[in-house]
Every structure is written in structure tokens, then in C-alpha cells.
Amino acid sequence: MSNHTSLPGHLMVIGAHAGDAENMAGAIVLKHTRAGQRATIVHMTLGEAGHPTLSPEVYAVQRQQEVQESARLMGAQVVWLPYRDGNLPVDEAVKLAVCDLIRQHRPTTILTHWQGSIHKDHSATHDIVRDAIFYAALPSLSRAWPAHPVRQLYFPENWEDMDGWRADIFLDVSAVWEDYLAVLRSHALMRGGVSSFRYLDYYDALGTVRGCRGGFAKAVAVMLPPGGWVRRLDYLPGLEPVAA
Image (cartoon, rainbow, N blue to C red; front, top):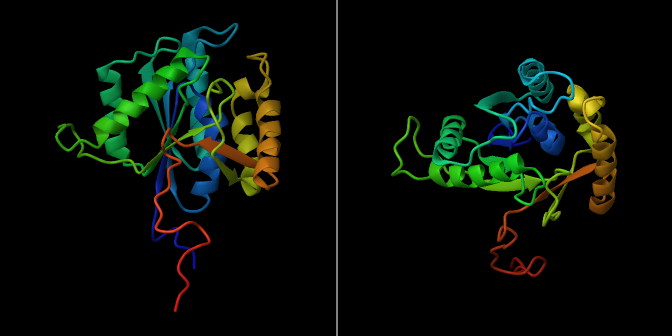
């Protein structure tokens, strides 16, 4: 019998803009919610400034609808914060707001942007999340919710965050791939017409490339934090003591 229900986890994905969490981690979320785990998607901004013709106010309403629909498709909770697209501050107030979300939702694992990004909101999110995880674990920091340590942090692959990023883990997501593409299509940005970047083509092709590297039909890759690839073992793999 699977132990998914006996040992539930909680995956939190924190993206800079609506759509970032979905494109870089939607397949990962689907893989784990289908296995009985919980997931929460956090959008630092709605990415409301990115439409060529709609005003930020109008586009923000559309993006709210899109993130709610994509969260439904992934079987996840969704939260969006009140920060402005392109102007995400990196200050103690924002870090404590994310700390509070971590303490409130108590994720076991967090996925967020790698710092080597061409977009300032992405690198800002990286810095905010790293400090928020630190604050969330501090029992001496008094907040509305008790301290909560996050077990693992990963950086999934985002086309804008590739400076210094590397593929440390390949995850088989073949079984959820079509559903992942449906999540992407729930956003007009991914379908085309809002941006000249071909999101659907890129991430569908990337799944094939990572699948070739990982030995699966479709795969995604994530990066461990610097130093996270260190393994603590009693013996080298394959050279453990032989049972008497």
C-alpha cells in the first residue's frame, strides 16, 4: 500500500508573477497532488503590467481568474499578494509577509525562482523567499503563527532564470504532462498573443529535452540550493555492509 496518505507533505510554489509558478512547477504540483500531497501556489504579483493593450487594473482581474482556474486544475490552493508587477520590494515587511504565509500553511517543501534571472521581480522573489524561510523557522520571532521549519528548498527551471542554474534532479512527469499543458493553456499569456515568447512550445519541448536527459518520456528538472547536493552517508552507495 502507498504511504502517501500516511505521510502527507505540503508543496508550496512561490512565483514572482501569475504564470511563473505554473510554467516552472505546474507539472511538479500535479505529480504530487495526484499522489495525495497538498499544494499551495503563491503569486508575489499578478503580472498585471505585462499586457500590450489592457490596463494593469483590467489585466489584474483577468489574471486573478486565470490563477484560480490553474490552481483548480492542479488541485492546489492559491494566494496572491498585493505587490505591483515590476516593483516588488525587497524589504523586511515583504519578507515577514511571506514568513507568515509559510507559518500559516506549513509547507514541507518550497519551490521558487533561482537568483540568476533577467527579471528583477524573479531575483527579488528569490531573496525574499530565502530570508522568509529563515524567519519562519525562528522560534524567537513572535508572529501570529508559530515557527515552522521548511525541510527542503528547490529551484525549478524558468526560462528567465538560467544564469548559473543547473539541473540537479530529473523528475518523471510523463503521466501528468497533458494536464500540465492544460494548466498552461488556462493562461492567455501561455496561449500566445500577449507576449512574443512561445511559452507552450518552449515548455513542451523542454519536457522532452529533460526527459531525454532523465530517461523518461517527459521530465522536469530542479536545482538544489548551493551546498544542497552534499549527501551524508555511512557508506558509498552500493558498498553498504552485507547483511549477515
